[in-house]
Amino acid sequence: MLHLRLLELRKDKKATQAEVAKILKITPQTYSLYEIGKHNINNETLCLLADYFEVSTDYLLGRKEAVPLLLTERERGIIEKYRALDEPSRDSVDNVLGFEYSRTPRSGKKAI
Image (cartoon, rainbow, N blue to C red; front, side, top):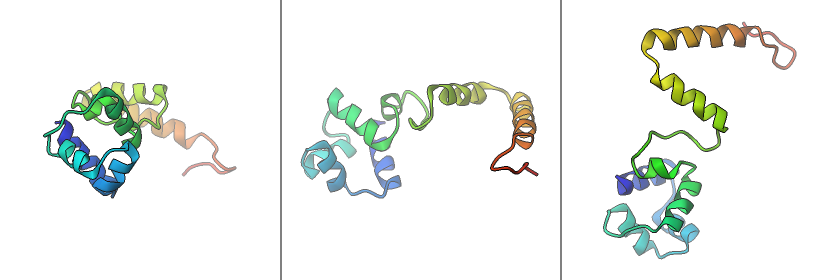
């Protein structure tokens, strides 16, 4: 799973293997072996990859879905709770959010 996630994330970021290898201070050949699952990744490198791709190590390891790390802990918690809801409950949450959004001023204007 890890090697597939690395390949997907690198392509999404439009980075080359050489660019990622440079960040990790390893050779492009070593990074290539990571992406094809032929070389184990140590914990330090795993953490560097998670930081670089802005995902959790759990996501890289296939334990969780991706939730961007640039979200606050509170925002990540809200997303996880929302995803656990059934469809009618999600609709209720969407309605409440829509209502609150419409009545909250932004830049001096009310939302439509």
